[in-house]
Image (cartoon, rainbow, N blue to C red):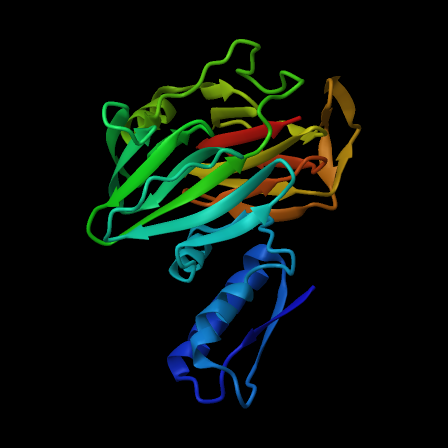
Length: 311
């Protein structure tokens, strides 16, 4: 796959430098091949957009591991909204609000879960009508639950308010896959504060469910000095929002001695032919269905928020 970072001939050395930085990120973390070329006539206003496109495949899909620094680079050039992953059942959108109070909005096609990346804001949830508004102050590290039936308004603090919206389109799932999944809905509150999430990871020795409702399961996943399973999910897509610790991750390849542990869940004794990464806090890991994966934190404690979207 080839994408080009197109830079105007009259561009500054700083712009050229940004191109090289982003290309380096692409090669290291998105497994893309990119190259810079200098056309004679290109509108300079397109420079930043082209720099951003250099980091995404032609289909606009994130894959594998996006390091924290790479996420920040994407936000710098995201504008107000940038869809970085689009699948039939879910999407990931980087959104930015700054300075002014936004209008009331609603997304009736999807349930949304916001992972606040930078900055802070006052948000209102409800119908938008007086008397039906719930107000919260949110900050980096918080998670916000915005069901498709709920309208919202964002009032950013000074500076940029950046968040990653995971949009989930199905309303329900047929199979109760995943630790914490149950037939009885257990939705998370409107806001899960960073302090609460951090405290859970600090004390937990096994997975703790944050949200189980509709088509979505969100768990605090904990591996304490022991590796995770070598597995494939045939009917679920997983997203990891890394919080604590580091690990060696293997993605894709083939499971060794894979056997069905439960419907749609394949476990094995090893993984061959995988891509290998070192993952740490604030990284994002994308594990599509039918992708072999394995996490090994060594002697460390590893913790991440798992968003699992299943059929």
